Image (cartoon, rainbow, N blue to C red):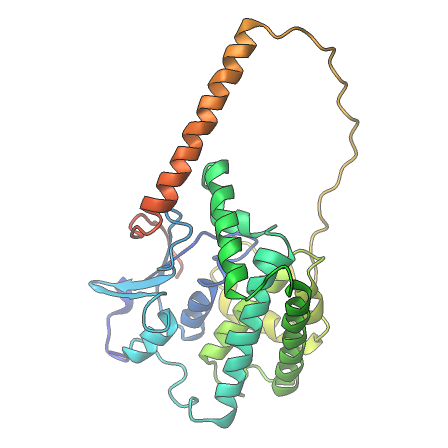
Length: 314
């Protein structure tokens, strides 16, 4: 299909934008950047209906749909089906597979650890669950944290050892990628690849989303040439369609802090009948919310992602 397809109906559906990124989802951002690097015109749409859906992101054109949880993900599916392929002449190179292993294995593992464990979910709730009722969001957050720990092989007994190994691998990956890149524009000299999409996505997310206290963020910022690489590609491929410029990658607004006096304590009074009724109703309300959580997780969690919000991207 590549070369003669009609690109007017291409749509990428992702999770919502946040933290100055077109989509703050670490699974969606690589697909977005890949299409940008390929200079393929597409429309961007957002879906917040099922925050734990494994289908996101997905790419659609007419009756054609490429889902994240099928055939190795959206990027691999698009390459197999001939929609767009940045790696057609690179996969036979000796460095290709080794670099891919560093980026999509070691660095992805480290970022997953940071999002759900290392930073205690500071950013995860805002990315995935901010549009949901508080109770449902909390339950889904704890559920995903539990699943992530299992996937990473984390237990109470080996947590410290696993953390050291994850950060050690990330440091080695940054060092190897920094040496490989030098001051080149792309990882493979003068042409972009899917590895640039994955690595740029990882860097932008790590620098712009993770808090300043993040161990992974600090390790990444030790490599100036990697930061310059991200700044160049971000400026050339991602900011051209943005109406408002984003801050440089190495600078972050300081977290808000303010001084305030403690609220004065109110004198204890006898509870009125209305207050007792209100508290009784509140308990019923919490019980109803808990029931809604159970229904949402057990019944709707596997639903399809149909409701989307569209945004003109190009």
